[in-house]
Length: 85
Image 1: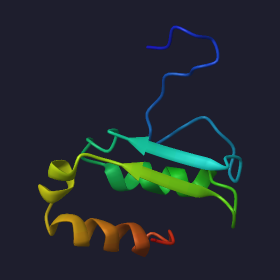
Image 2: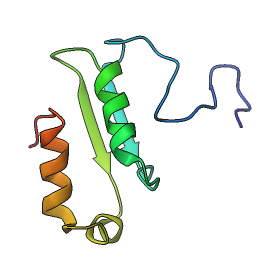
Image 3: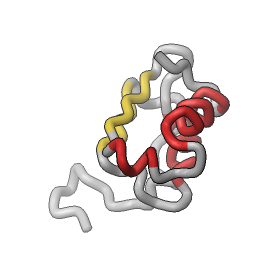
Image 4: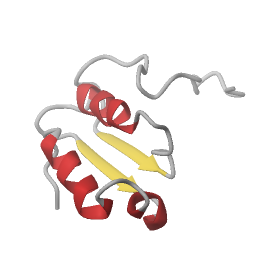
C-alpha cells in the first residue's frame, strides 16, 4: 500500500512502466517470491537498452537455499540476458 502519490503499489512482475524507460533497477531483499524470474524479466523489459543496469542485493542464505545455490542463480540471471560481473 503506497502512502505517497509518487509511489505505486503493484505486482513486481507487472509494473506500470514503459519498455526501455528505466536506467537502473534495484532488487534489495525483494526476490523472496516464488516467481522471481518474472521479476527479473520485468526489470529487463523496463531497463533501457543497452545501458540499463540491474543491481541485486540479497541475503546470501536466501540464494544458497535455492536449488543449485549461488552459482545456479548467477547462471540463471546471465541466461536471462543480463551481463554478470
